[in-house]
Length: 441
Image 1 (tube, rainbow, N blue to C red):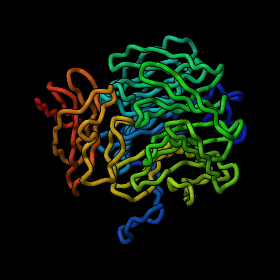
Image 2 (tube, rainbow, N blue to C red):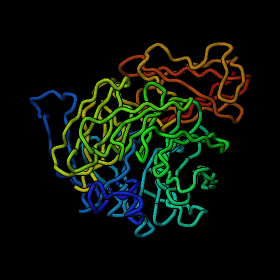
Image 3 (cartoon, rainbow, N blue to C red):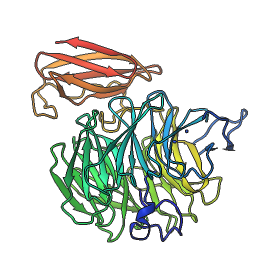
C-alpha cells in the first residue's frame, strides 16, 4: 500500500513515494528458515516465530492471505510475482504477466481464487490455485488500486489510492467505481463488517469510510489528526479495527462510527497490518526498523504484548490468519514470510466478510432466531443444518439467487456445524470449496 520500500521509516509516506506505494507470493524450493523457540523437544508456545526466505532475492513480500487448503498467498512487490507458501514453508512463485506492476494486497475470493491489486499497472489480478493469472484494467486511469477484500455481495471490493474511489469487481471482471466524498483521501485498507457494509481507511484524510453494497459512502473522522489510518479488519467483537501508522495507535470503530484509540507501547512503531487472531485477540505488525515486532492486543485494549522478530529491520507489513493457530506475516525489507503461533482454536480459511466470525461459540450455530430478519430484510421462515469436515469452507449461500448471512460454529475437533436460516421456500446451496450440498425447503 503506502511506500513499502526505500527511505526511512518516517519518510515512508504517499507524498514522498507514490511511485513506490504498495500493498504487498512463489518454484518449489526449500527455503532458508529461522526458528525461534521451536524444536522437536519443545512444544510450540504463543509467540514462537518461524521465518522463511523467498526464492527470489529482494522480492519485497507485501500483502498476504490464506487459502482453503491451508496455504498462504502473498504478493512480491520487488519481484513482480505472486507467492504461495505451504504450512511447512515450501514456496512457489508465479510471474505476473504485466511487468513492473507494483503489486499491492491480496485476498481470497468467493470463487476460491486469490485476487490482488496492481498499483502501477492499474489492474486487478486473479490467480487460480494452479497459478493461472487473469488481469482486469481499472477504468480510472492511474487510480493505483490498493486494498482488496471479498464483499458481502459475492464481489471483490478494492480501494484506489490515487483515483479516490472505492471499486467493485464481479467474479467475471466487471468493475464499478464509487467516488469518495473527501478529495485526495488516499483510501488504503478495506474489509467487510458484520453489518453487511465495507469499511475502508482514508490515509490522507484521517478518516474511516463505510460503503454499502449499493455504493453509499459515510465517513467518520479519526480523533488523532494526521494519524494515517492504514489497514482495517473485522474484529472478534464485531467492531472494525485499524492501524494508525503515524498516530502509533491501534483503533476500533463501532457500526455507529464511534472510534476508540489505543497507543502502541513502542514509540514510533508504525503499526501496519492487522487481523483478528484465532485466540480472540487483535494482532498487528510494527513496521518501523526500531520496532520490528508483532503486537497482540485484547479487544478491551487493556493489555498489549509485543513479540520482537528474529531478523532485525525486517519491515513487517501485512498479517493474516493461517491454520493450526498460526498467523502469517510478510517482511518487506528482508524478503521473508514469517509465522507466529497465536494459539486459540486454530482457524478456518473463509473469505473475509463471508460470515460473521463466531467460530468460538460451540453450539451456537443458528444465525437468526425465528422472526428475525436477514440482510435483505426478509423474515426468517426456513432452517437447514449441515455438518462439514474441518477445512470445508462455506463461501456462498444462495436462496432464489440472493445471498444471505450464515454463522458457523465449531462443534468438535474434526467438524463444524453450519446452521443456515433463510427466507421462504426455494433452493439453499451451501457451496464449500470441497463439495456443494443442495437442500430444498
